[in-house]
Each structure stands twice: as structure tokens, then as C-alpha cells.
Amino acid sequence: MSSFAFSNNLVEIGALTALVGSSVAESLILGNRGAAGVAWGATSSFGTISVIKACFAGACNGWLRESLGVRGTASDEAVGLELAELTQDSNRVVNLRRKTTEPLAIFCHNSRDDKTRGAWTDVYAMDHCTSLLLRGIPDTAIGHPIQVFAYANYIFYRHRYTLFQVPTVLLSASKLTEVYVLWRHGAPLRLGMVLAAPWIFFFLGAIVIQTRENLLGRKRESEFGDRDIVAGQLPMVRRPGGVRKIVLGGSEDPRATTLTWRLFWAVGAAVSVASVVLSYVFMAQEPSTTVAIWAGFQLLWLGVRFLVYHLTEPANPMLERLLVVHP
Image (cartoon, rainbow, N blue to C red; front, side):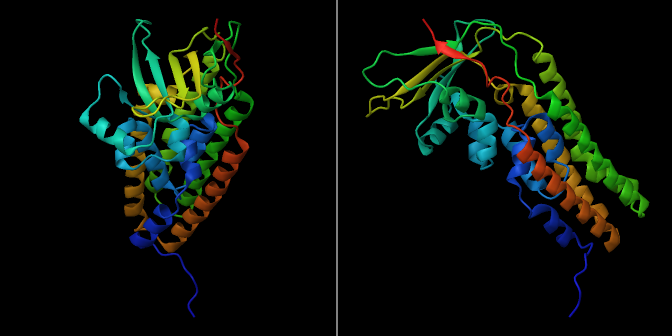
């Protein structure tokens, strides 16, 4: 009976990298655990396919995400699922809307230039921050006076998770030990850099994300946010509406609305794809010892990534802000 041995065959290397799916990696890369999660999400090559899928999900708008089949629990938690403006439907959005479930809410995204105008979207999945915001206020039942909620007018600063996030982001630099060990055992430096490329990109992104959060945390939040929300059992063509919740000036998660985040995920997907392809090519030229060392490090990073996910709080800097009935 022959003993098990690692091989540098492309098919086997591909199986090691691609077949290990990771919902944890998806959630971390999409920022559901803050900057620390982004930094650790791509440390292990095991689950890279999930990282690429998550990046595609974050970079796409609602109808494209649903059409491509890259939507999942992690993407819903990060950016929700909104379809195009109700007043500017395209045929693709209309067809997709017919296939989806009933909407959970309607958002009005107010323009920063003109607060009297806004873009209306129907919502089929809410991001984590919005779900918690609505969970904290009571339903208005049919026949009862409508209660409209808004943020209480008091000085409020975003919650910062600096004490845990910053050291955890910096700790992910231990990924460089993998590059060093592979190089010391005869692997070319280019192999180590190709393997570390996704981590380098997301590590730099995590530094920018955490720096931005620290700067925003020093600035007083405005009284009203940029989004009005009508949620609950919305009226349909053959059915009256039911219980509802209304929030004026709710805050928005920038991951769901800003072009910067979409570009970040789009570039991250490209870097991850290039890293996977080139690592297959370079690893095929290496001895089985190099592949064994590489696989050992991937298992190590996989375990640490899992630990970071469960030790890190979900990112929600507006969680403690008080909502009151708007007069």
C-alpha cells in the first residue's frame, strides 16, 4: 500500500485551492467583520473561489448579482439586494422582479445636492445594519396611527472598534512568513509574491478602511442620514398593506452605495483570479516538498481566519444611535 504524498500536478493543486469553499472568507472579504476581516479574508488560498465570488457579488448591482447567481447570505448581509429605481425600470429588472419574492421594503435614497428628490428602490434583502435598525423599533399595526421614526437630535459619534481591529489587521502580516519559508526552501520569490498578492491587496485596503473609520469616528454625525425607509407588509395589486415601519433619514452602509467599494471588490476579484492562475503555473514546476509546505500554511491561515471571524464583532458603527418617534 503506497503512502500518501503531495503532487505538483495542476489538477491536484487546483482541487486543493478551489474545492475548499468558505462562507467565512466571503463574509470577511465583504467587510462584515470590519477591516480585520478584510485583511484576513484572503490569507489562505483555500477558499479563493469563494473570495472571488464574494468580490463579484459586491462589485455587481442588485439585478446583475441575482442574474449571475453570485448572491448569497454573506452578500445580503453586506449590501442587501435592491433593484433599480421604481420610476426607471428596464426590461431586465422587470423580468427579475417577477421571479423574486415580495419586497421587504422601499428605500428612498436622497440626493445630497437636492433633498427634495430621491431615487426609489425596492428591497428584497436588507443588509445587516439596516436589519438591526428596523429590529429596534415596533411595528405599526393596521388601523393604528402611523409612527414615523428618526434619529434623536443629540451629539453622536460613530462607534470605533480600534482596540481589536488595528492589532488584528497588523497581525495578518504574518502571511509574509509563508513567503520567507518557501523562499528558504528553494522556491523562487516570484511564487511567494504571487501567492501573497491577494493578501497584500486586501491588507492595504483594510488599512484604508480602518483609517477612514477612525476619521469618521471623530466627526459628529449629522441629524439625518441619506435614506428614508418604508418596511413591512407592503401593499400589492391584489392585497392591502399590513404592519409597517417608517424611518426618515436613516444612515446608509457605504458598502451598498459607494462606487469606491465596488471598485475595491472588482480589483480584488481580478487580483485573486490572476493569483490563482499564476500559482497553478508556478507551483507545477516545484517539487512536492514546496507543495507540502504551501498546503501546511494554507491550513494554518484557514484556522486563523475561522478564529478571526468568530472573535470579531459584526461591523455596525451606528448600532448605538437612538431612534425616536418623529413629531
